[in-house]
Amino acid sequence: MRTKWIPASLLLLTAGFSAQPLQEDKTVWNGVYTEAQAAQGRVLYEESCSRCHGPDLAGRVGGSLKEDTFFRDWSGKTLGAYYEKIKTSMPRGAPSSLSDSTYLNIVTYILQVNGLPASSTAELKTDLLQGIRVESKEGPGHVPNNALVDAVGCLQQGADKVWILTNATDVARVTEPGAANAETLAAAARKDLGKGQLRLLYVVPSPDAFKGHKVYSKGFLIRDPKGDSINVTGIQTLAPTCN
Image (cartoon, rainbow, N blue to C red; front, top):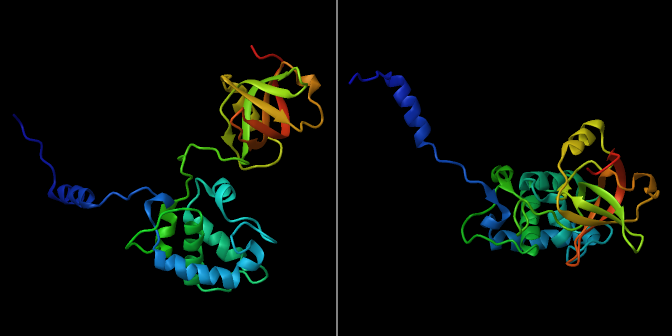
């Protein structure tokens, strides 16, 4: 059998690649800070942040930094993006006025208050932030309560006169609050109808002209064990029928 010749330089190159450790896909649930950092962060938070965001992080003049709000706003983004947001916007009236280590320790305290586990040894460092993803405990595909979402379905009206999206697709998170552009609507029109049902709340103006249409709906998700709803910010027709 004929042996294929491989240059020594290529062997060295590939050997170098195989020796490279694979970078782990870390989330905030992997223990990315220490208890000592969070303890320092608590003191710093109380000095610089509690007046606006409250002693319990639930919000006051500034918004809430905890639980549903934290995961709604930051799931899927990196901890680096969260750190930069805090650094460039806080404290109120004096952004970027604190040291990098102060901002970093405040972030670790916020993680602790949100129930995210600490590590016994691994301190959080600024050069690690971009490699750590914020994620709710339900996982990366979970859409949290109050998130801005869209869905496609058939517009109907129930016996109680509440508008309903039947044969609805799964809700998906969106970032743009305004009306959907032509590209988004074209993609929505190509979607197959789903099997879900969503109540549509506070639909103004009334979408009577779209009854029975395949429609695109956008709004804020309201989770409910009895059935999810969308607090509607906009409805646009995709087709005059749902067939």
